[in-house]
Each structure stands twice: as C-alpha cells, then as structure tokens.
Image 1 (cartoon, rainbow, N blue to C red):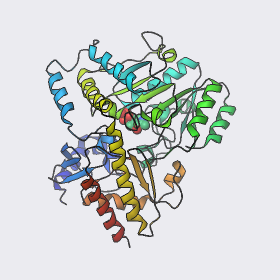
Image 2 (cartoon, rainbow, N blue to C red):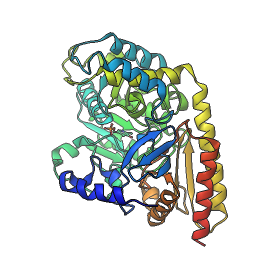
Image 3 (cartoon, rainbow, N blue to C red):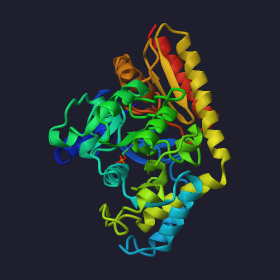
Image 4 (tube, protein in one colour):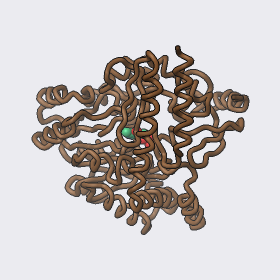
Length: 429
Ligand SMILES: *Cc1c(COP(=O)(O)O)cnc(C)c1O
C-alpha cells in the first residue's frame, strides 16, 4: 500500500500543528508509523489521500453509527445551512433536540447542549459540586472523561496510550480532589467513601468503559455504586459519551438497568458535528445558570447545523430500534470470527464485547480494569494494527481504545476483516 501523499502531508503538518495532529491518538505515535490522511468517507469505508480505501472500525470514535455521509444527515445539514450557520440566540430546533433526548434517555428531566464531551463532563462535575457543596469526586483508573484538568488523573485513551503519569499544567490542588479506584473494584470505592465521608460530590464512570479497550462492568458493580450514592448523597454521573445512543436508544442506563443522576453525552449525539450534552434530574439541573448560580455557557452551544445533524441521526435511531439489534449482531459476528481465528494460534487473547463496542487484548488473564489492560501484550497489538491496516482494515491505533461498529458494515466487510485476522495469526506462527 502506497502512503506517499500521507507521508508528505504528515511532514508538512508537523511544521505548523503540534505533532501534526489536532488530537493526540491520531498521530499513530504508540503504534508507530505515519498517520493516514483521510480525504473522504462513505458508508463503512474511509478513503485516504493516496487513493487507498479501508473498512472503518473507528467511525470518528463513535458518531458514525450509521456509516459515513449518512444521506439524511447530509441532506438536513445542506438545507439548514442556507439559513445561516449560527445565531447565538434561541431556536425551536434546540427545544426539539432536548425533547428528543428526553424521549430516548431515562432520568432526563432537563438537558443542556454543549460542543464536546469534554465540556459536558467538566460541566457535570461543576454542577455536582455546586449541588452538594462538596469538592472531591471519584473516577476510575483508565476511564477518560475529556481533557479538563480534574479528569487528567489516571485517565485512559491518549493519556494511557502515551503512558503520561502526571500532566504538566494541572495544579496539584486541582488533581488532589480527584480520587481514583480500579474499575470493577467496589471495595476500593467503599474505602474511599469511608475515608472521605461527606466530602465526595460525585462518582463519574463510563458505564461500559471504552478508553482502555472495551471493559465490561461486572454483575452488580453499578448497582452497588448506585446504593453507595443513595446512602451518601453522592451524585452518580454516567459518562455516556461513548455508550449514549449506541448501546440502546436510552444508552447504558437502559441497557444495564441502572439510573444515573446526571448523564453526559458526546460522539453519536452530534452525528459527526461538534456536540455534547449533559442532563438529568431537575432538582440538580435547575442549579445551572440562568436558573441557578452554577455558571455554564457556550457561544456556539446549540448551534443550528450541529443540532440538525444530531437531531436527524438520533431521530433515525429512535424510529428504527432494530438498528441496535443489527449493529449488535454485526459485532457478534466479528467477535465469533476473531475468536475462531485467534483460537487456532498460541497467542493468548481476550475479546471483550458489549453491544457494538468490542476490543481485543493479547492477554492471558481476563481484562477487567486498567491494570489488566496495561499488562497485555500491547507490542503485539501494534503489530496487529499495522497488519490489519495494510490489509485495508482501519482499527483504532491503540490497544487502549474500543472499536466502534457501524450499521453500514456488511457481512462481507466483517468476513474480510476476519480473514485478514486469520492471515495475521498465520504470520505469527
Ligand atoms: C470521547 C470521550 C470524552 C470526551 O469527548 P470530546 O468530545 O473528545 O471532548 C469524554 N468521555 C468519554 C467516555 C469519551 O469517550
């Protein structure tokens, strides 16, 4: 596969953009090699600047749940854009978007739109702190909640990929209020809650974690957290930036049957445009300005083009619940095929899957938290990544990321992916 144009573009990019990219994981730094520059995409396929095509398992890190350039979204954007790209004043479309989100997600009395998942999570923490008049919060090792200061403690995604232990620029007096526990370790949570009695504003969690590969919550884990929050007056925040509108119309809350107090969204909610949202119980949400004094704002929040893209995608998901069955089935097919391919080798592996989130770790032990994900053979993952890429299969360029399956994938695409994985297995014998 020829990457001459991508190589040239990467050299040029590095002169003007730090690391040549506008978000770190894109740089291929941990897997090695040069990032592929994308020209366009349609359905399940990415096309690069050298004319190569790839079956896409990133899907813009989730939003492209129905594939790239999904026609109804494109048409809706085209129509809307004629009426200007931004007003900075309220629109009816924002009400329709809020009503649609409420109709899909449980425990959603009120919702505020923002422009990224980072903004959604940092605003939700501020709100939980304002609501409880407490400062500390608990997050889980390997979970990623965006790049706001307080979250960059034992964070997943790029922070884990690049093995960044402490982030210069985050003052200790900010990160001191961030308490961490291993994922799936309820005893560690209980211990923190005892040690910091009446000091903890919130517990924030990825209900199914996707930023250390895919990590599945163990039976009863979320229920136990819910009980602790009820007992201690702690706000439970589900970070559904990945899981929202993906694991079900009502996200992980619906899929796992657990009620959160606040929920954050991103990724799918914008249909590929920069959108995030946070929402939840009225009792808490009414503290947000201008109703209350917890200040939160955004010049481009509720932007009409972003709203119509997100609205069109969410409405399609709501009106066609069979989509969720369809993407789950496709992911299962991929799971079974990969399982079979790797079973024929001596390579130890673990495939974690829930709904349309899936990842593989080359590990002998079950992968249930960050420590077990980090202990896996990630050098082998990097080899696997490049082998797949050379075969036209675009996986996330890090073992610390889940893969996202889109409904545009055909059985043939999945079969091609499995065949390539088989070839990888053979190449390793
Ligand atoms: C991607 C992600 C974020 C951050 O969203 P951005 O839009 O990149 O700011 C937050 N939480 C989770 C779980 C994510 O996966």
